Amino acid sequence: MEAVKVSIDQDERRDTCRVAYIIHFLLGAGNLLPWNALITAVDYFAYLYPTKHIEKVFSVAYMISSVLVLLMMMSWGGWSRTTLRLRMNVGYSMFVMSLMVPPVIDWASSSTKLEDRPSGAYGLTVAAVVICGLADGLVGGSLIGSAGKLPKQYMQAVFAGTASSGIIISVLRIITKASLPQTPKGLQISAHLYFMVATVFLLCCIIFSNLQYKLPVMQEYYQSLQHDNTLCSGTRFWAVAGKIKGPAFAILIIYVVTLSIFPGFIAEDLESKLLMDWYPILLITVYNLADLIGKSLTAFYVIQSITGAIWASIIRLLFYPLFILCLHGPKWLKSEVPMIALTFLLGVTNGYLTSVLMIQTPKSVPFSESELSAIVMIVFLGFGLVGGSVLGWFWIL
Image 1: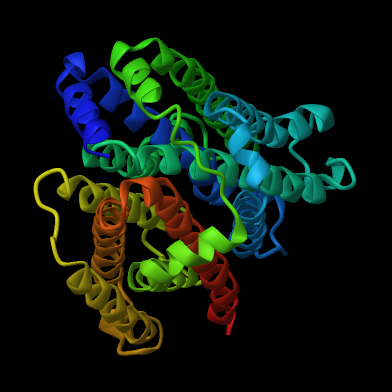
Image 2: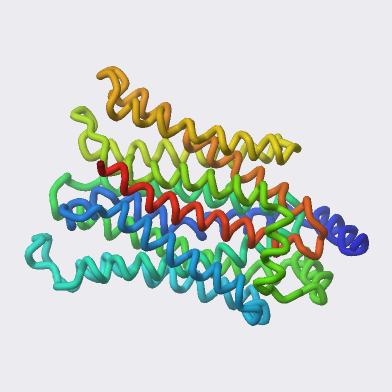
């Protein structure tokens, strides 16, 4: 184990111009970019399917399918016989396919009128979200599991990248929406441009994913660990989960709280006479910016106490009464400023605590279990996403 650590330290010093770090950052951005693309186009989907609870349906469909893949990776030892490169390529290709579904449906109808849309268009859109979730489980589980064995800055890069995807998408949506007339036709064209640019970014991620294997630092890293590919099994998974039950519980609570509020409550239950349909886009942008800030803070300071991070995660339960006050409390609390401030706090705490737990936990177990511990954390993160998405339906009430 000491030899492996020495090798990794040498690789860390050889990361010329931090190319490997940048690639991990971009791959992290690509991992969550499709999900952010789907939820940030809330104005587009709300126009197409006004009677559907789009954000809540998307959340449940995406999160459940993602967790199913993670559970398969946990229970089927054969997944580790497939190469990381293959899993990443397949996952990103699925992302590309799913994001092209909404514009293809529009092109097939060649009309902005709702009554002219193909039958089953909504079902196809939800199916694309499911495919996107399956790809997320494949890419996220593989990327974070691999980063768990690397020095901590690579895990930080991945999670900073996932947070940056929200900012990239929010800025892209604002630009495409603002640059075209606020008409049904303008909304449709802006959405097409939005999804196409996002797709181009994902195609670049496929290139980056394959390029990293050409880097000397990554070649040496994989060579040093080529005999360390221990198979995953349900027994080993739960054995490792028992060792990190505190952080696993904390990551679950973080995402139960976050996903039961964001994006469903923020996108569907709030209204602004001043900002109109720009309001949910603004709130989503604020959340994504705060999430990025939180995940980037770990590049400067990481809480060394995992116990402290666990308690901070539990304290986030206070967001429930705070958001309920903003929804049903005094009139001044229902205004835009308090909601924007709360949304910012929700994002920054989500980003920072997630990054801290994902950096520290794989380093708290023996090196041979670091990859599996990262997968355990992602599985419990997924459980939190599913639980939060289901709880999000209660905000309808």
